[in-house]
Image (cartoon, rainbow, N blue to C red; front, side):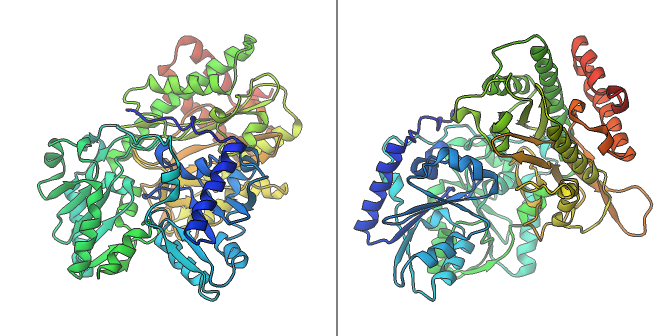
Length: 612
């Protein structure tokens, strides 16, 4: 697999200033009063290939949740709470104003800033249709015009733009998926027949890859073929993807009623659906605006509805669940070996340890595991104050060395044919303060309370989110990110629709879903900490009047007890931790060397023994 690096993008203040000037010259030629640049590609995915990092090229910002607005005399960058520290470090304040994406709508800001009748340019392939509708509504009173651009000016101005990935496609066997593509499409066909609809347009590559049981590496950290699909009422389907990635075996794998076509031909197929007057279901929030606008322009009846693949793939079947257990065994082995190695190196006084060395080490240990298919996200290896940035990236700055800080945060994960992993540990690597230990204990306490919670079937993520925050809330603290997210099966590490977050209102936990629990605490310019495991939701076996669910951990690696203030934990919370560490010994122990096992026995002893 070959993915060009994005590190080569020159984001010095001088170059960014030149690029802003070039964009403003384009705006002047096109009589535009504003131009908006989101952090997205035509598939609206979380992770972007190097060739579509347009926002980074323009602003220098590397986070994944941001929108830039360029005006003739001003420029603003809107980011969410995870990146409020990072944006100030990466983006010149002399060029861009900073705004909070959640607290201040960029559309409202534009509506207040622009004059009646002004023209705002946008690339319809980079925004959702919901965004387009919101923009039309927001700008209606002032008659601000939305100008759909036929070509993105950044693509013309980015002269040394990287090439797209040449990663080959792979056909995922049913021994991993537990279900073949024809069976999945039959469910979609039945749904279309029941609704009296002609076709379903699927725009998210992870949903398309799940449907056809294919994978690749077109995007860093996401093992997918970038693709679209159309499924018809009779169960046949069109897959729009780079045809050189999938050979003739694909037709035997997916079925004879599947047609493989180049991705550029989807425009013709959308036009045909429109001219035939078909009734098409499409999820507006998952689709870029260009697709429904094209369908509507040519006469299709577009019915907004959820992409059924998203809900179907969120509930793992028994084979997928067992596969996720195996993937997390691999992950637990690698992480435990890493933690043992790190303790040895610190005890030996090794002077060469820095964030890069540590990230390389955990990734090397993951690579030793069978079937490893790359990181599920860019490893977060953060020492001291760098950990205060939730999505810190050590490769974009000078890696900080160990030896000057008390805490180190490692957030890592991998892809395997059996499943996808995600785990965070915070480790004592030096002298720590009483405050650090207090906050660590409160974060761990929130994690344990939520992990031990039984809850009624149908409970929403927003209801559970508050449980993990309670210990921090009582201390007047909080964290500006969700408590948990869904995880795909050899797919995206952040899988919708499931999440536990203050902003979430709809997603309900169901048996078979995968969810992380990852409360944290971040003190700007000082330290950050987080404890994260992945859990599978399952029916509770304890007798009850109503159907109840609970969570079972799939993640097994030691939690650093040296940072715990035992007196803050209840008897039940201490018992949970001791039981968890016993499972770590039983599940991981046989895969370790004698020295590693001796270390593991020490660090997973009952908490009372460790604090005696």
